Length: 274
Image (cartoon, rainbow, N blue to C red; front, side, top):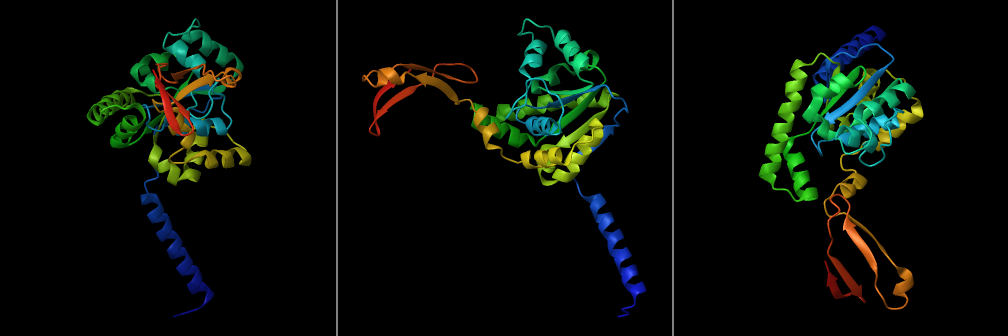
């Protein structure tokens, strides 16, 4: 074997080209359908099936510094804009949009139900850039079975129908669109954050990039807890409890339904209420 410097340079060049060839074959879960428009004013719209990974993308945008209304962890949904969109607010959808546009050149919005009215949204928003999030349908249906107690077959059918709506819109729209696999991005954090930044045309700080990377996880506990149907909230009057009287209230967080309550004393159930 010739150990001359020239031989090493040739070997290094060959290995580098081989690596680049294999790297291009790797499925990183990100596909740009329509390139982003180089304009300052735009709106990023995160779209996907419920429990299909939209919170991962929305949370990443939040950590990268984008304004997202009152969106907070773990679901990162702006309730002000979403309630207006679904006509459950005194504010109109257009009013909230106008307010955000007047204060921010770039902002983002995530709401899974937006997939039912994408053409309308595209017309209402300023320079919309869509980020479509995909996840395998069995994972979506199974997550709904665990969190929402839905039947697996109906969950698969619903996910299939919802994805058809998204695909129909993608096939017709000329708006900039980035397609994301929620399973792949967790395994390719650096490439995902880079693709997201380029699509949004932002330059995040190193701190923001690291925060976004740290946020990315395949099974976020806070999200799983917050989105389960059986998650409840309530209060107990501790002043009366000292007198031997149990008084308080409880309800489910998602549908505000009445919960079943067990009164436990010394590890024994002494009363059940509903």
